[in-house]
Length: 253
Ligand code: 13P
Image 1 (cartoon, rainbow, N blue to C red):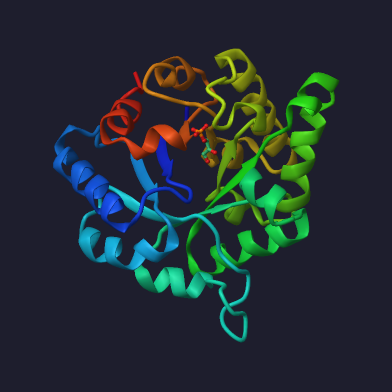
Image 2 (tube, rainbow, N blue to C red):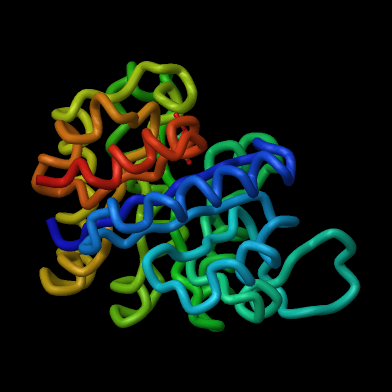
């Protein structure tokens, strides 16, 4: 394990008052969170500004975006630029979530531009990868996942890629309650780290945080986080409950 990271992806859940209540509940538990863990919450974009105000000068939990455009400004109605996110104090940005790849046709070349755009302004990308059930069952899943990483990330310089967080999120485990076993997750995390080491070097591979996501919850986080190459989790459903987010964040041994 190189880093200890727990990120909550709130997705398109909670209205503004519900989101404020959740933030308040998390703040009330501040002293109970393991201070060694990089904690991140990625609320819906319209809430980032107000959340940034509340969390100003609070280093214990950082804000992440769920999506960003790859240009700095201009006539792109509805899009949000990395520069704008940066100006709010956003420190991390999810890129390439399977829900965006599938619903909004985001392909490797767009994702690679989004990653670069975030790095340019100093936001750490949380780059997601993962296979559908049919790919998992076809036995080419390892190459499928490595192609996603290779195509979008392997042209980065060593000093760029080592800042990145990669989240392995098997699509068949997302929101299904059917998590990958710790062996299945470790196999992919180890593969990712080994390939980064051969593409770059061991030091770079050691610095990249690799998170597991997909029905990770208060019950299974400890077993997953115990695996050598699992540096933490990208949590969906279980992150919108303060108590379970706390349990997950404190699940490192
Ligand atoms: P769930 O934890 O709800 O399965 O979602 C995982 C995820 O997609 C996080 O980005």
